[in-house]
Length: 191
Image 1 (tube, one colour):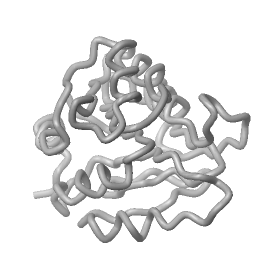
Image 2 (tube, helix red, strand yellow):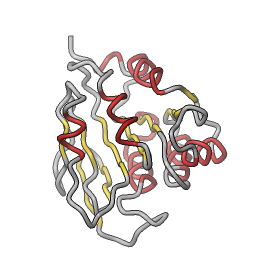
Image 3 (tube, rainbow, N blue to C red):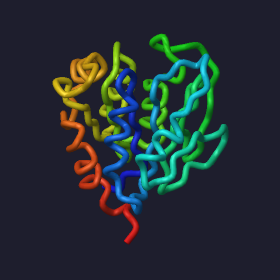
């Protein structure tokens, strides 16, 4: 299988989890990674520089109609839903979903539609249940689903909701998620 995109969703406790996750990726990892981290939209976000300190892969906010490129990590900007459609980013200012914008479900469902079995969806720590429906959509299209072990997650609600909704492929501790992604995506790493 040639995976084309990895999508990751998290909420409460996510900055710490993402920092630990991103520092494990090698600089030559090519599969694009798109992340939704719930953050308040009424204050400026400093998530890109914070995560860049932990990553050897470039981290940025994508803009509307930007082409998704290999070897990049993209963080959904606050205040808009982020979708991926056939290699392009789309921002949508529609209503909040699950009380949030950006919504993990919106990103994951768009990835499932565009990439079917070539997408890996990952749910990390967080409150409530955003991402459960999106992960189910990825699974229904033949994609691969990974959830952080709820016993390890700082906030277990999102991982538990995802596990309850979908027969996920893997439930892993944080330190095992990147090794699994490297197994799934070896052919997309540059030599």
